[in-house]
Length: 431
Image 1 (cartoon, one colour):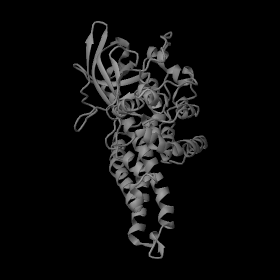
Image 2: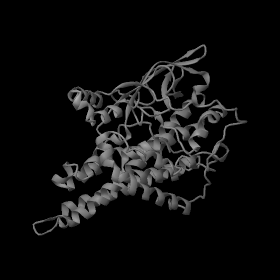
Image 3: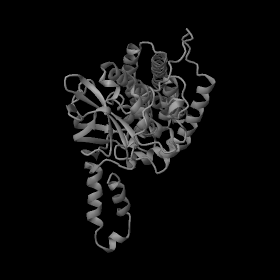
Image 4: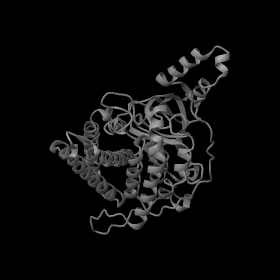
């Protein structure tokens, strides 16, 4: 049912419906589905097996502290970044415009992205991964490289690792045994961290989704918004206000009764195939509560998510800079390149300056996070810079291209729309 819209789209291109005189009704149905979304049961393509309990939770050790503030990537990090950058340039960038138009990644793209093994770095060896220590900086560099290709598709690629990272960092031994091994296989499950809600001045620490205790566990009611790959997701981490305790995270399988999905196309991030997650009297076992419902666990999740969005903003802002520099050097007006105009040159310089500041603050926060140091202040600065300067850079990119910045022939209009999401989004990604 989650693939109903895709099936109808294929049907609309069939010659059979012309013979039956159904062309117009089918086209109207497809249009309505795209605009308003179908309400469908969650994807139920995988049954997570309840595994034998581990002896204790498997955690990644904090990264070593060299005592120096040095953000030069290590050889391993450089190799990873080069590989991801090449993938983003060859796979994400060419597919971005089509994904933006069709509200979904091209078939096979996300499975090819899974082959990169992005989630394996954050999974300990005991659970089938290759991780030995926390790698927040590496995750930030990977997010940045992917977003240089396309921000929407980068979110779609990173969404499953947000769930696996949270389970590794805060899940108990049973939760890890049940769910994490699936993320270390060739067929990584589609999953999403659902914090966002459609509410004015949304505060992730005051979710409207409610969780109440029941004799067998918990019951969830509410609606989550802008959930990446919602129609395909098999597993969700959902934030809810737990009566008497405040915000907490719950593990929700898409096959749970009461879970339905509705398409929710947005201004940006269209390649991420965002949707609404409806939770109506969803019954969960007591073991579905992540991290024991501790407030510090929820705060950590929010901070690492915001850090991820800052890294994504840096990647797309770098794409804007790399695109406008050759453009203003090649575009001529009044017999000379427009880059010779002081206003144009200063605008490009401002993009480079703000981008460098955003990257440094983001990577410093990531370095402190992976070493187990306090980083709340650094995340707040990164979030502020990403929201303000990211949107400013996107707008400047459109402005520098003039009329070309307004048409889809050039990707800056898409990057501008995507960068506006940075100041709005919560959850979805996690470093």
